[in-house]
Figure (cartoon, each protein chain N blue to C red):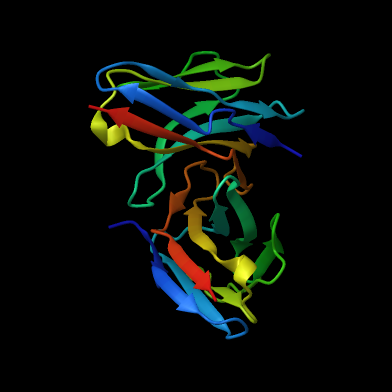
Length: 112
Length: 116
């Protein structure tokens, strides 16, 4: 089944403790991105990747890192999480030349 | 930069009735796509309908249809014969170009409640 898989789905952590949210897609998509969803703000792009080893900042990249060492994986790294990064996070992927984005199930992150 | 505005934070509709969700956007580009996404309580992002800017004909998907007014930069979603399962957050989104390698720009969302 074609899908985008995020892990974990829920995470509660403490300020400053490094964490990684994984994202994997099995559709051989070139384009992958991370969004955060906050009440009253909709979804905003954090980082994106056009292909392996090619990443760039989205609209709200501060406090986040990403890597794209393999085509299928695009982890989101929070080196030193802070409470303002408490949010719902989505990974999405799409095939070059198409406009349909496939979303993961979302990761609810709480930083205390 | 492109922006998307949804002016109705919350709406409600009686089951079997019709409801229209509003969306306006701002861009100086001519090649773009517009989308409506549904997010039920499960949080999954589900594509409801997609409109290509160069197509004048309004997109339809079963009970869902859009009213695309390119000159007015308006893209409203009409849900006919509303069902309880339509209860969800709805996001309007914009994508520049057609290559799939540009970000989706989302509105703030409209929470729709369908009442039995």
